[in-house]
Image (cartoon, rainbow, N blue to C red; front, side, top):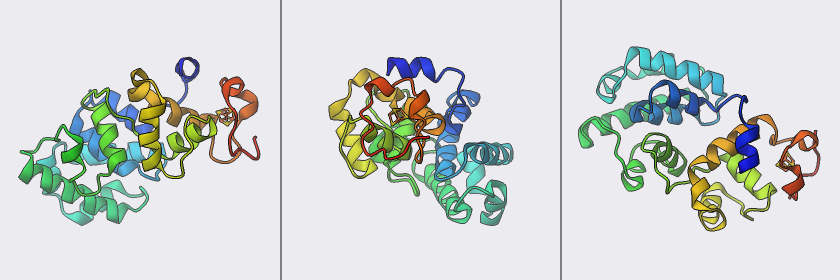
Length: 211
Ligand code: SF4
């Protein structure tokens, strides 16, 4: 992790991290940007979030927007119709149940429409500075298995296994480090093992071909 901390300096950060930095950790915007980011290129997420927040900056104002306008604003993020429905429903629930604010617990966050553990963990880490959460997405799942930290078949299982396998001081940054590494070096297909700074520590479990 110390090597990764050094190596990711200067690499492109994940979109949600950029939004988190730009929005001074505003929980609502971090939550919505994370919802939009699933299976979507970072640049597309960033552009869509910027358009959306220019039009409506709070849960109340976003909940009032017509669905087709939200769809237009976030297009072309993947599954934009579904995501627009989730964004609107999520904003309505934030307004009616939580006074327009993003709740601060995992138990409450996962009751919001479209919010699973991955999104909830990332909001806890980025917006509320939690040191008790690990956010596992496809990059974290893949790389922690390649490194041999865990032996798991699904991200949900990986999250629990990582709590047992890693030192708590790294939990808040595991997502940032491994997502950045996954987008730049340890790619899904053909990981760049030849130029990887952590190759000496990596057993490359399950890697058949490197680029
Ligand atoms: S050595 Fe290869 S498989 Fe291991 S972390 Fe680096 S890029 Fe990924």
